[in-house]
Every structure is written in structure tokens, then in C-alpha cells.
Image 1 (cartoon, rainbow, N blue to C red):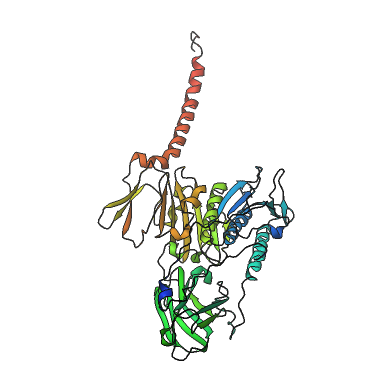
Image 2 (cartoon, one colour):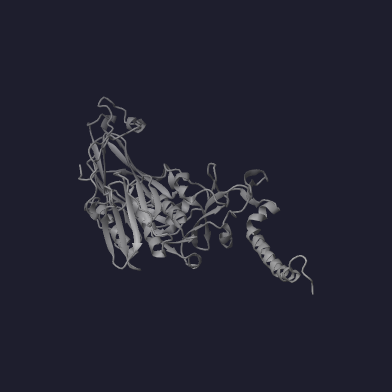
Length: 526
């Protein structure tokens, strides 16, 4: 037991009477409704080093309204940090104005942070009056606020990295280039031991390798305990269920190179190391003729940059690495909270830190590299030619049958991803005053998050369940609804109102002198 967490492990062991060598592969155990009851009194953190809990579930951010570009950047990087501290679970994020007093809840898994510009760089805990839980205040002059957040993230990352380190292997990993070790992915050493078939699984996302990847090769090194006379063992390596390598094993060390076909590579991948071991005489009872296999954490992936995946949600978050630009229009707390929730959902899929940089809308559109854009006025994104024009539309298939329709009377939000040249763009827009973008995290399914998205377009109608689809390459086509005064009215209503106001002013200017010359009733006219 560590000072800040209790680690529980479950081990499934076959009966000692079992002699079927294939039996372990057929066993399945599901644990559900697991709860941990805790007693005692909540002890608030007293130092900045003790501020973050072992697992974060709720993050409250306080910002000036509207925030500056640097304050917005620092807030979004804090959202990414919070998602990493959630350790794969859902994270609830709220953004509140700094001008309103806020008392952090007495929740061991929740924290509050206040960001603001100031003359001096400072990270300090402040207890609001009447509150038992502190706020972490991060202040700094222009140019240093984001640096303070990055220093905090680097400190926490260093603490986590010190807990997982690779044991010294039989070789050293080459420095430089595109290489990532198994230890860096959270597997410092893999050990398999048993008297029959065994396997270990390595889960990794393309984003864990630092960005879009192709041409991956794996250098796999380890050692095998002596195989008893009459026994035989074989190593099989599978990528996402497809066999990519196999060879008989002999006792002693081994060091192998193998290629991972691009055709089997996905955004989220499972590499299975399977040992097919048959003891002498097929005797697979537990403890009889055991075999042990070690895989060194210094084993590594070597790869090239690039992608073969079609445009869509599958290309993110790796397409946003190593850094991306964020543009918000308008820059307010609603769009900030939506951006924070979206970044937290993306960060949940990878251990690699996302690095958003908020810029003004005009600058964001012209900045090279990946983009995350949120706009409440759908007209502003039309020059980008997104797959779905966020105006009233219907979706039809190749046979002309209507599959989906959004009427002019309906308000809806659209999340879509596409490419503009070589850069990835993730775009969130809304038509009408609803739905509230602050509810994006709940609409995206808190349990699955980004894993629940498919295709390249996600439509969120107000008051209805969201729907995802693939428009580009999916056999579907978007057709705008036929022009009508009701459809065009939302676009031209401001122009009509302005023209009417000008007409009224001109009429008053024209009629006023005539009314003055006429005078009151009964007055002699000149």
C-alpha cells in the first residue's frame, strides 16, 4: 500500500485438478458492482504538492470573463492535465467566472483552480471564507502563466514516471529517432508463468507514439526459462487479432525484429504476446512443469510519421500532436467550457500530453498545423468547406432515400472532423440558441467518451439523442433543404431589421419639417 492509494489485485488460477491445456483460454470472469466504502474525515491538502488527488473526477476552473488568450491556453492545458490525472476515467469540467465567489465542494476526488493574470508568478493554496477545501490559485504576468501550468504538469509527470521504470535489459534503446519503449507505455517488464497456454496484452494508441504513425517495427527482447525435455513452446504475436509473427521458442534469451502491417493498425491497438506451451506428456496441472517468459521493458517500437486511416474521428487525437491551435468565436465561458470538455475527452485516449494554444479567430484560421475550432455562428466556418454545411439539410443515400433531416425550426450542434490540405481540423458549431455547449461532455457519453464516436460527423439535435455518421466515403450525401423564406429568414433577419430602422429614421427626418410648418390646428398658414 502506497501513501496515497491502495492497489488491489485479482488473480485467476485454474484448479490444480485441471489437466486441459486449453482450459485457461476458455475461462472468463466478470466483476461488476464493485464498491469501496471509506470511513473517516476528509483531510484537506495543506501544500501545493498535496493538492491533486490520486484520481481526479471533477475539475472546477475559475477564469476572468472573457479570458485573455494566455489565460484560455492555460485553462485548456489544465483540462488536459486533469484528464491525465483521471487515469482513463471520465472527468467532469466546469468553467466559472472569477468574479463570482466559489467554494470548492468537500469531495476527495474534486478540485478547484483559479487562473488570472497578475504582476507576480505564484502557485498558492487559498481557502475561501467558510470553506474547508482550498482553491489552487495560479497567477502570473503575460508570458509566464502558461509556463507555470507547464511546470506544474511536468512536476506531476515526473512523479508518475518515477513510479514506472524499466528494469535494465540486455540491450540499450537507441537514442533519438522515432522509438518508444514498452516501459514508456506503462509496461516496465512483462512476466508470464504457467503450465499451459499463456498470453499478455499490450495496449497502445497511435497518440501514445507521439502522433500519426505507419511503418511500425517492433524489437521484442526477453528470455525464457529452460523448457523441460519433451515439452515445446511457440511464440505468437498478434496485432488487433491478426497474426504477424510466430516461431518456436527455446530456453534462454531471445531478440527479434518484426513488422506491424499498416493494414492492421488502428487508432487504438492491442498487441497480444501468446505463448503456446505444451508441457511433457501434455500435463498441464498447475505447478507441474511450469514455464516462465520475461519480456523486457526496453523492447521498443520504431516507426515513421504518417497515416493511412481515412479522415474521421479515428484520426484523432494523434492528428492533433505534437501541438494544435484553438480558435473560439466568441471567446466566452461557454465556448471555453466546451473546449475544455472536448480536450479532456480526447486526452482520455492517450498518455501523451495534448498541447493546445488558443489564438484569435482570424489568427487561428491562418496558423499552420492542426486546428480545434468552436463557433456559435455557423456562417463563419463555410469558407473551410466542412463535410456538413451547418444549415438546414437532409441526408440521403446513394439511391436518393432520405435518412436524416434537420428542419429550420430545429436547433442543433455539429462536431465534425476533416482535412484542409495537410492539416487536421476538428470543428464544433451550433445553429440556433440550443443546445448549451456546456453539456457536451454528457452528450458524448461519459462512459465511452471519444471511443463512442465513429465516422466523421456527429450531430447533436436539441432535445434529442446525438447521431454519428460518415459522410465522406460512407455512401451518404448532404442536400440543403429547398430555399424558402423561412429558411433564409434567420440569415437575413438582421439585415431586414437594419433596413427597417434606417427607413423609419429617413421617414421621420422627412416628415418632421412638414409637421412643424403646419403648426397647431387653427393657425393661419403662410
